[in-house]
Length: 227
Ligand code: GRF
Image (cartoon, rainbow, N blue to C red; front, side, top):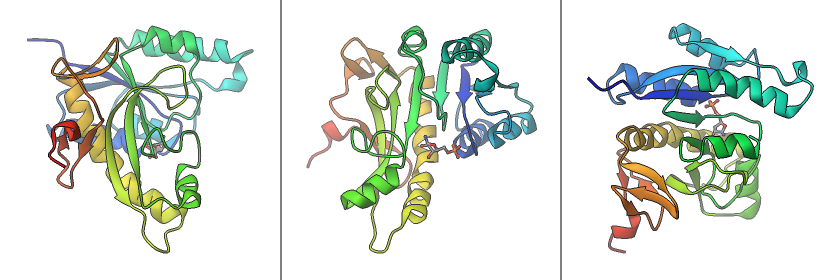
């Protein structure tokens, strides 16, 4: 019997993406286990969700450490001891240092609330509204030293509607983040998706464009879809 696939989740806040992972595991839609939840904020509701699910939860408060590196070493030391196959950044709001990213290359992904490479960083919905785009969405990408710059695995799109404000657009995007994250994790857990030397591989083949989530929550290869 192969050992269960172990996922470590990093979260700084609410934890709704973490909950989507936990619910997918509980309902048998994701064949994995959450080995631990880690945060830079002891009061993060995500940690409460972990404790409620009897999952180890750990927080390290940055101000208790003399430097960013010291804080990161402590937090990722705990992550490493959980022996995860994959680290999922789900609302982890701190920039991860190059050395740590290097150590987890190909084993760390992030969910970001925009259609990367558009609107990196913070306030992505405000950026999208200010840019006047007709379409917005979310992306799951491998983490590299460049903030929100790693190879994109998958995306889900939403329309920007007349009269949209930030909360309305954020809610519409979040509604797609959860199925996108779960569908993408299924491919990562089954090792159908991997990071190769020149980018994302699906079943060993280079992915020319990010997978796209359809309205039923299924991922498709847009590079194989007829226009
Ligand atoms: C999500 O919108 C995610 O894309 C972004 O931070 C938010 C976290 O939400 N990076 P939650 O804590 O998972 O509810």
